[in-house]
Amino acid sequence: MTTVQDASKDTFSKDEEAKLQHISDLLHLFYHRNKNQHQRSIWWRCFCSLKKQLNTLLGDIKLLNSIPTTHVARTQKKARDPQIRSRIQQRLCFWQSVLVQKWQHSFSQLAADGRFGVLGLMLVASLADVCQIVGITAALEDLGQVEVEKVLQRFANEGWDDGSRSKKPLSQSGEDFGEVVLREDPSRMDETTVLDKRKRSEAAIPPCGKTVKRDDDAQKAASVTEPTKKKRRKKGDAIDDLFSGMG
Image (cartoon, rainbow, N blue to C red; front, side, top):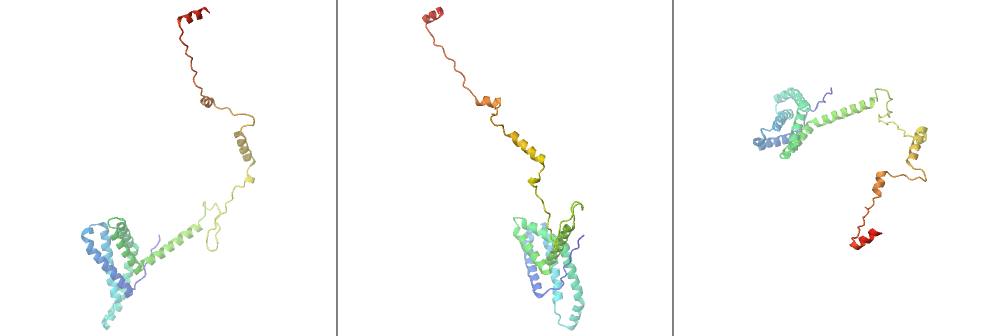
């Protein structure tokens, strides 16, 4: 089982703190603007979870970046900073392994909806900015690169047909050269195959001087004759009939 690489960032600059605060303010306005309409939607729970987690993270970052004014406050801050850094790391690891996937899936479905696509795009963009600032995006990219390299290495090392064939040649850099495929040479064809092909071609051609007889049905269809017309005999009078009987 592959282990998730932890986001090891535990310190944030004032600029990063200001960016996170700006995103938190936008989510706060988004909350009050859409609460009455979408508070019963499924994606609203993920949005509230993101808003709450971001505010808690900002509280720890402000405590970590605060500058005490007295000696007692500096001593207390010095003893409290390791605990705050550890809490920030644990929170970001939980985000990376569990929460970010749920948030991204929920907000992407909202963005795919034609009616509320703008709300989904706003939440997806806010989540992307937060993940980039806290270092989760870089950690996931490194993890993806490691997984891709493992898959390529395993694919390069595995054999074909359980080792019955030799492995493909690899260069020094691990690049696959492939295999040489030989085409069929006509000069090396079997003699029987050549003779069979020649016999089939000669049988298809009729001999010279002979005509191919048509089928009876085709010949009958080609030679359609018109029906013979019966000659009508002219009617004669009684004298013609008398002389014709005497002859």
